[in-house]
Length: 479
Image (cartoon, rainbow, N blue to C red; front, side):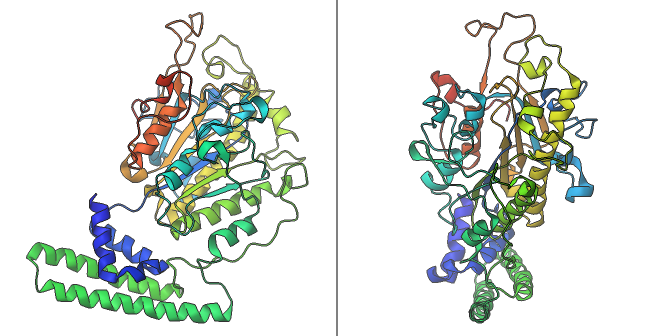
């Protein structure tokens, strides 16, 4: 790959020892970009509870794959087109997909573990998937996380339990990866050894490393100038571009005042409570936003490139959404679906319940939009792929059909964004909906996992564990 070749050439210029400096990551990225190379790709999986109000999530009448609105009345996707709140509209950095099925073969609440594994949950309520999740497959098994200090991280809000119903990340064999629910611990895990704090000794060392970093820039400047006399006109033009990038980098590096490519964040204050059912609920919104900000900063600093985030709900009295105190019983279980929310089966539905659930969905997508905002501020949104989903489609039916599926970011152009893709409902109206008939159709989430892996340069043709091999094999059509 040309990206790898140019990066290797750059590191040979600096010397192997220099590659461990956080500063070098910034120079390397600048060098790669000036040569037309793409930044390293990043992946973030996001889970939100309680399924979706399909009637308000779906593409509206008269819209097409590329011509659609996100700001219609009751839209849960409105945050993605809200520049006033999130600094930009992300409508062109979004793929909203309808008709994807998890096929977890279990109660809907236990299906979060299927989202990134594509695996049936073996053993019922207390069961686990049989294989690793995509984030771990890419970061650990495929080695894509080896270039960073932290190969991957799993964050969550409100629940550190490692059951399939509360977990996105699983290692080889379906072993759950521990989640960090405390932003203070997340800060320590990500930044304590990577970014300079307020300790005088650490600051003195930072100043020494900064001078070393600047001397490395001077060295590279001199080396490039020497090369100019030995290459042709086209190569001279490229070398001049490198020098311009280095000059801009030197200005930025002097301004930062740390040996890292990012400013040192303040260590968060501890929250009075963190866990669900133990007084943590009123703090969940603030915890979620802090976890998002820390994650985006860590990605921007290139401390990690692979992560998962499990969001919680706001089940407490007088919550800011004005929802019932128990979001599960008072919102998810009261949802009365029409045909869209019933996978095509005839149904009347209650629009009042759609709006209630869509309010919570909008809250969750607001957190994804905040993540996009922070990644955009760090200049890495276009090289990041966010995959956001839930364990259910229709939460009242505990159905794993037609789960809400959102891809966001850019993936370095590997996935064509700015679209709304629809797959046929499982049970088209007017059919018997017999799962053995030719009318029955499913689009397994496994195919999306294959597509994402291929977008990250991993050459696989199947992912996960489904009884019908065709469900685990191949890519998602039209992606």
